[in-house]
Amino acid sequence: MRHRNRRLATIAASATVLVAAVSLGLMALRSAVVFFYSPSEVAAEHPGTENRIRVGGLVLEDSVGETESGATRFVITDRVETVDVVFAGLLPDLFREGQGVVVEGRFGVDGVLEASNVLAKHDETYMPPEVAEALREAGVWQGEGEEAVPEGGPGSR
Image 1 (cartoon, rainbow, N blue to C red):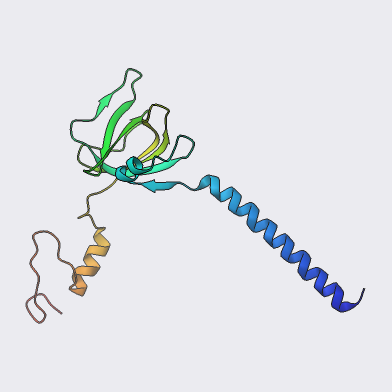
Image 2: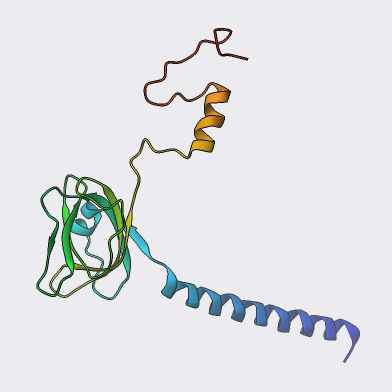
């Protein structure tokens, strides 16, 4: 085999191996991908019972209760639509009615989201102290109860 043909065969074999590796990687990732929905998106197009999904929203007031089996039952809403959820684990400390949550799980045949994981979100005003301090020093952000300091005024550098 001539040098040119050998090089062409090596490139073709390498490309075939690369395509196979990428295809196998994408197929493995497809099963690990979890899609995020709002309750309105779930109501508009139900994701089915076979897919693992995440639904985010607020815990509806007066919706938290317990089932006969001891699991926690609650409703998530985006103030337009609602999703019923059942979770049989320990809820996070920040979980409460009116608080934002992200729930991961699968829908049962009864239409209730059977959660395997519940994540409670901080409110939108939360900011890590280090970031807040850096923004304050740059004069970009003032936290609650703080007044903006005009440039060149007291406290400016």
